[in-house]
Length: 269
Image (cartoon, rainbow, N blue to C red; front, side):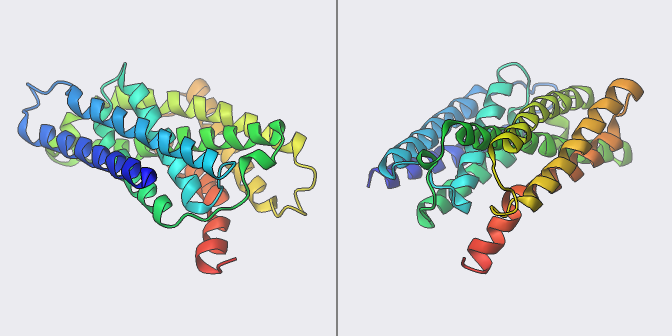
């Protein structure tokens, strides 16, 4: 019952925060537009309850379940938390229109489709570090991909016709692009740690069926590294940054969730 109450409250706070952000965009003119704190406060409550649920489930199951929905819920929670932390200094709270509903959906799916798989406590500290750095890297690059998608829409609307109110309410293109590269840099750092720790501590990639994940992750690392190098040396930005970011994230998405989705949800293995 405790878990149902926690998830219900968390989902409600996520959705209410989303609704208030949308209402604020719809009813406040751009000249009067200013950060609204109530959606942020509600989102902090939602993330706190979401985190509490994950911690309680961890203790109840003697470890974390790395099932598809449990992992997706953890990633969604970290993405929401990172967005809230970024919102402390930058006006990016409106990205919650996308992030918060996804976190609510993933939390609901985890509660209803809980599949207890191998727990975190069965791993040693090295493997635990590898798994956690991988999840953090994916979460940061998830936000970067969201930033890239919004940048593409924002750029297209500003050039072709008067943009919609939501696009106008977003930070400037320069601010959005700056946050994109900050997230890419942080995400690449953790992805590098994840890859290095994986090569050091995973004994047999072939026996553990991790070859495709490793190859896709390395390709994503090369794309993100190439983009940051191109940004530094050649000033790459705009469409180039957007396309490279989306391509790299798709590779990571396939690496992290592709095989798990096929095995667990389609083949039931």
